[in-house]
Image (cartoon, rainbow, N blue to C red; front, side):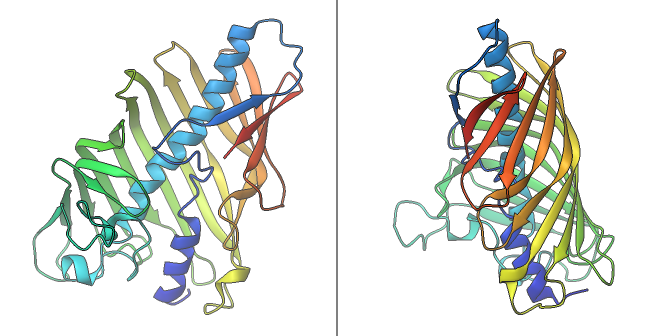
Length: 302
């Protein structure tokens, strides 16, 4: 297995798996339809919406992964994470541009190094603005069975009145280290997830299981630019519009360290008997993907 330094780079590079990134929790995805032969525009819009919501939800829960991976010695007295800050959390501040004053607290129980399981509660109170532009409030509660960098370790996270911007986040997020001596890997689950847009009370529910492997760059721990990651898995979802869907990665998603977006791979989504295919392209680094419905393409901007 790589040294901790390399794990840190891996997590930083992967911090946009949700990069499927529909700009995280800041806004919904942007879709531009091309010419279409769809005879029912209502159904077309619903399928487009479900596809975008599935990917946007991935991004929103990935933020939780990054926060739990950043619980390190400087924050909680020992390295529970990966000895690096891979989220926008720890430059949070109140009103200053330097973000030197924090408006959140961290509580650790038991507060004794190397004693597990360990519960870490991050309390954002009435709100914190991060360097990533996200405004968080409420609490994140994570139980660590071991430091996250240890193979076999699990981190189970739940939420207490937790919001990111105008979105309320609920459910259980579980990360398990599945690394082997030759390859880094993680299994990430979201159980009974729910995202509610407090501006319009629209919600979506979501369950997901994803496996991530580093497939290139394992032999060059000090040179992250050649790191490439393969993502596989599936999810199910529903929304307040009365629609349900399931999604399956049919062609492994490819994430490169040197690019902030997914560069390749396909996700097939089935909604109420209708099928859509989300295609991330042929490996080029750009912020576009294409949703195909009945063979007709619709551009989506990441």
